[in-house]
Image 1 (cartoon, helix red, strand yellow):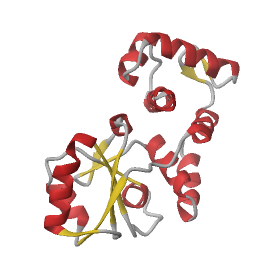
Image 2 (tube, one colour; image 1 turned 45 degrees about the horizontal axis):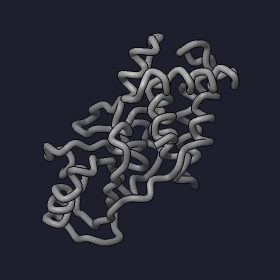
Image 3 (tube, rainbow, N blue to C red; image 1 turned 60 degrees about the vertical axis):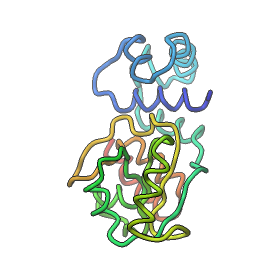
Image 4 (cartoon, helix red, strand yellow; image 1 turned 30 degrees about the vertical axis):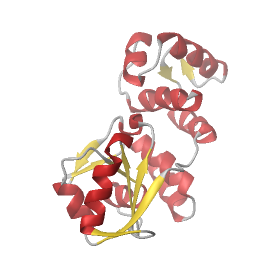
Length: 189
């Protein structure tokens, strides 16, 4: 959980437009105030923040990338028109990597649709995906991970998309052409 807490704090810092108190940061990151204080001290030593304010967002994002890990728990499906299914579902999700980048920046071909879901919803998602397609390696990955990955998500064209900082991290971890797309997004920060 240690890595998850650090990533939660970084996610909140990078998504916030205004300075946050340690209490507010703790509340939004869903971790203790003590954890926030300890981690902010670590970030200040690295000259990445001053109190709870990012000094250099790009360097802070680079630090996040240095501690981030690629999601390991997912299921794959082959589904016809997955974006239409996502637009109609009432289940909670956040689109990331190829599909999200294509909506936000239009650089990558959306060869695969990756979505973050809450672990408690896995059976419902499995039912929806198998009703609409086939289970096994395909064009859709349903990723169960820390629900905080959906922090800062927004709705674009009827689809829930992860925040830009989260998208940059996910694209970078994906590698290849995704890394290039992440670098282009990073320039806009």
